[in-house]
Amino acid sequence: MHGICQFYSTLSDAQNSSGHQPMPFEIEFGVFCKSDICFFHHNEICPNSPWFCSQHRKNNEVGYLQAWFSEKEPSDKCLSTCIGLGRMALEQCPSDKHLRRLVGELSPGKCRELAIKFGLEVNEWENFEYQFQFQIPDDLKFVAIQFCRGKSRDFTFRMLVRVLEKLELSHHLLCKVLRDVKPDVSGIPEDTLNSPPSNKVLLDLSNHIGNSTMQLAIELDIDSTTIQQIQYKHKTKLLEQTKEILQIWSKKQHPKPTLLLLIKALHRIGKMGSLRGLRF
Image (tube, rainbow, N blue to C red; front, side, top):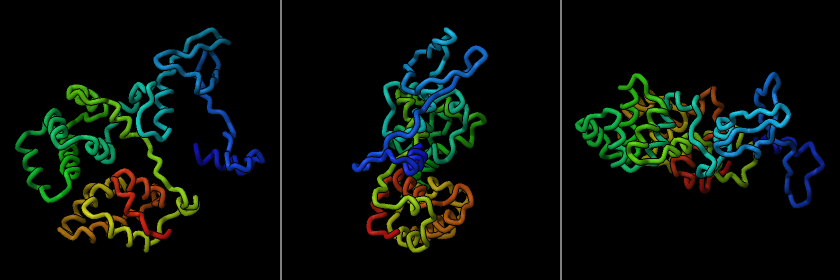
């Protein structure tokens, strides 16, 4: 949406000298009302209340639209009007990225409780602790919950909501898992952000990822099998692991490997500082 606004602003004379760009259009929702589609401004949505169409004298349920719209706006936390994930999202199976982001919000102790609630045996958790004793805690937490997903026939966001509630954790953690992020990219031209980073940038970046290679690989949509193969191939050579991960990602066809996607991944794993000094 932000990109569309910028595009339309370039076609308009409305931009003033202060650099402020007015919204070139209004965001409206459409709902089936009687035999027609009626539209209303998104600001008219009231939490937990239907939208009343004055033309057809009919109440329309619109809570799902508010939930959908809130997911599209980058934000650090849910608005007071957020009702959680919508029905369609709840029925989805969380991806590796979703699981990685979720466990990143939990302490090892809470993650252990979560995993055991999903059926992980205590000895299995202890095995993972031994296996990942020399890696960062987020690697251990991710692999444990990923293992739980693999054991379940019906691992969905709805199941996660139920277990989080049993552990007295907010289900809004899942909103954050699905929400987009908006890292600080000021000073970087938009054309550069939407282009693949150069091999030199990837090589320089490799030196600053440290032991967060697995976390970065997951955020870049590298599949688990490939990650495991690279870890086995390079064993304790973290730099070589990172180099190969970034090279594999740079050759992906979809989604296009842009600098912006890379920056968002670094933002999510807390490695924005690794961009310091790099020239794009």
